[in-house]
Length: 121
Image 1 (cartoon, rainbow, N blue to C red):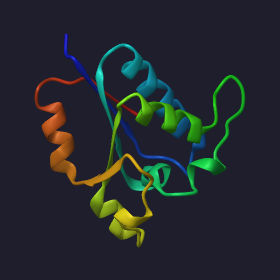
Image 2: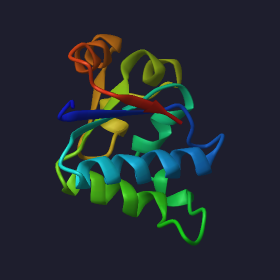
Image 3: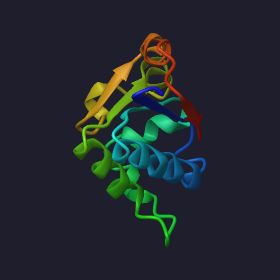
């Protein structure tokens, strides 16, 4: 069984429920002692843009998105943000929250190349 786990998230502004659930699962994986990476692409990049996660709160039983992200990063989770997706939206590394790293698709391929499971939201 792989010691890593990957969650890809392609929604934030367009579907806060999917962004929230993606980070719920990422936190569960991190809590299960899996080295966990979240890869944000397309609209999902907004999860890592300063001030955006605070706008998303799906309500009980889910914690607000900002809390889920803080918990994930605080537990050592990695957040990679699609660099071309940032550029398309006029964003840069300076717009990202602490703990989020711009990365291309090669970072995702590298993570998955050793057999890491991956789920998508």
